[in-house]
Amino acid sequence: LDPKTLIFKGLIPGMDVVGEKFRRNEYYVPQVLLSARAMYAGLDLLRPLITAASAGGYLGTVVIGTAQGDLHDIGKNLVAMMLEGAGFRIVDLGVDVSPGRFLEAAEGNGAHLVAMSSLLTTTMPAMEETVALIRESKVSARAIVGGAPVNREFAGRIHADGYSSDAVGAVELAKGLVAAPA
Ligand code: B1M
Image 1 (cartoon, rainbow, N blue to C red):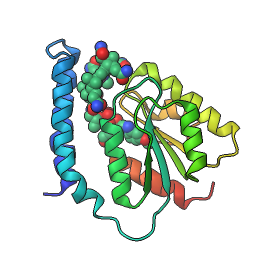
Image 2: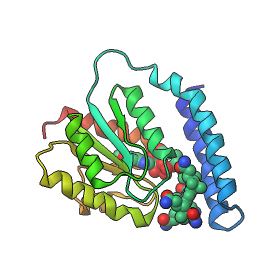
Image 3: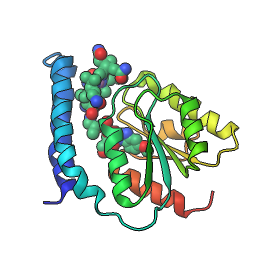
Image 4: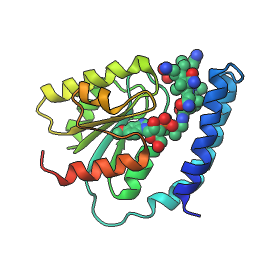
């Protein structure tokens, strides 16, 4: 079986069930944390199979992180893993990343792309602030966004350069942006 099939047809639908149970108050935070730990155990096994696929020069550098105030990182890590597997150099800033840290890292690493993830509606405005900060600076990196509450319309409204609903789409988006002149 393709490792991506295991992720997208096994691990992620499992986490969707957890999310639904959490929403209905059938699961509480500890159960969700346990599920996240199980998900990571699965991803750790699959990571070498996915990232081993790339060899040779990098397609570009991507600075990635979860928006300020947001601690969810499973989706962000999945996107980072897929991008790495596709041949990008990844600078992962982790979770709760302020607009200033995104900008600093993009500048310091000569990033082609800044990829932001948000899972909470309350942390979506931090993405808008980050895009604005990048635009006001001399940094030429393009900003892409994703995460469960984010959609194409929101991405357009905050003037992001791209949006993807999933990790596979994020790879296509990133490849397209580095291939096209700014
Ligand atoms: Co939280 N949580 N959580 N949580 N949690 C959600 C997001 C929620 C929808 C659950 C619910 O109510 N049904 C809800 C948000 C409601 C809202 O904002 N409207 C919620 C809440 C409320 C909270 C807390 C506030 C709960 C509390 O404390 N009372 C709290 C917030 C803490 C904080 O961040 N400040 C909290 C905490 C947690 C845990 C720590 C327990 C844990 C996170 C563990 C971790 O990440 N290490 C957790 C989890 C696991 C979830 C759910 C169940 C699962 C999220 C997940 O990992 N999904 C989630 C419910 C759900 O989404 N169904 C929920 C799997 C992952 C692969 O999907 O991240 O969407 P996702 O990534 C996808 C795409 O979105 C896309 O690609 C990925 C796959 O292809 N993508 C990108 C993601 N980022 C991208 C970036 C890109 C492109 C694509 O860049 C270009």
